[in-house]
Length: 262
Image 1 (cartoon, rainbow, N blue to C red):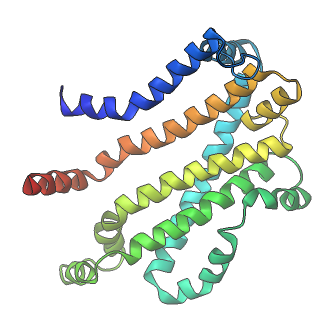
Image 2: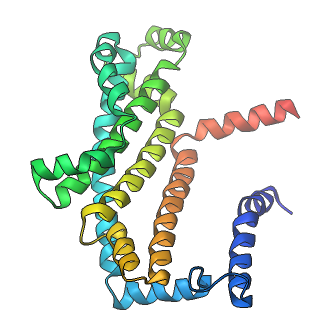
């Protein structure tokens, strides 16, 4: 078996086994199908709701809100994270704010945001944005702080000053940590967005799960949960695919280290 196939098998063995056991146990009557419907029925219900029901619109609206919230969080979070990691004065100015608001569940801000901007897209996007924004600031600031001083001095000696300092030295140096921070930021945006939709929206995956629960439509509840989980999985897979392309030297370094250790 090739190394790639071995890694794939190690990654997906437990999820596949769990899904098969779920299907078999439900069909055999070990699990109560009223509360644990067969996975195949959930997939059929989700596909039917996407094509013929409201689930397609719910999914589309959640994706739109997520992309807008994440894009705003990434732009402002990276900029402030780099500035606070690079300049001590900026860090002293914003650190009390980030340290205070980062642990705060952003869904708790939704009622206040609705009072200020009204119920609608802006409220849900701002709530999701706030979660990813602080996560990205903290991750980016930590990545900047971790850049060795010797590397910075060497880069300056070779002419990495001004804008070239950021484009040729700093961003390549922090790229692995930056991408990981963006991945976590997007995932947390999704978590808060689903919660915000659940609480106040009429459409979206969170709203769909709430509607289905109120109607005791168990299969539809599971369909919404499964789709949300798949979105999270796709976020992680997307960043795993992008990272080797954006940071090719990291894979080369890992191969070199692996060859030396063997």
